[in-house]
Length: 449
Image (spheres, rainbow, N blue to C red):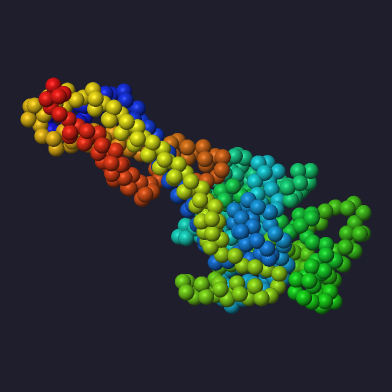
């Protein structure tokens, strides 16, 4: 009979305290595994979402607020930018794509965030090397919409469904116009899953989305440092067109709603997503150039999504993660102390057993090894059980988390940090079993018999 078998049978003889100490290790490891995996998934989602863009350009203010509102749709936008500024960005020689984004409204059913944008939005990978998969035609016409997988599932919408929008979160202000779903996005595990996208032309056509002319002129004069007369001259054709439409509508006694193309002077964008030309150093250089240009002029800023979220994760989420890991490490340490107490207390009852083993020829080193093996077995078996239990928690929790938060979590996700669990437990078992093992090592055969 080898030493491992003897150690295992010794644990079986004390099955209840052994089971409880092993269970305490398993629960601690299970909690640690769940924290590591879920934190890794959430961290990757926050780091990767929006990583397809080199910059998010918006009104000056908090870069974190700009990123959270534009990319994650979980904060209020700072302020809007003139449409003229968006067009200037799109014409820069080093900009490959400038994608306008308008936010603030929500769906009437489900209260999902609305994003007014152009079809170009879906031409950029939502995370590196992962492009959008859309069932349907996508954004083509003014009143077209594309919805995320969570929106489709929770509202029961599909291609052909129609919906209305609530203006700026005001429950009593529902737009009359209907948008038709022309596409459903396959799950991405990003905020896109819980978002409804509408064509920006339709967004502008809604009442209250076109800025009053006088306000637009004043705002633009301030933004560019121009006089109002200069702004009026720049938009001379737009102002003439607006006056003509107002004259036509004044003569329409039935007061029917007419949807005209919104003049540029009345258009605004919440933010602009920028993709630079080139790759690597060339794109990074262009990004820095535009950021510095924005800092020196106008009332706008450029935020790098990855850098902003990395700062947030490091300063806030990272500390929470470490707090959870310290807590689970404490739980595991307590479990180790439980193993130590269990084995050490059994020494007084096992003195005769140890003395008999010694009398039958077992050496002191053999007795020490058996006690150490008992400790290792309890830790390793508890650790393996904890790993299985931790992955089981993630497996069963992933659909619940997805349903409630929209986060797509791989139920069989694995984190490389898990590879350190078993070696760490073996080291702890050796430390825990050392004192009881030395006690057994020093057992006096004659006295014990």
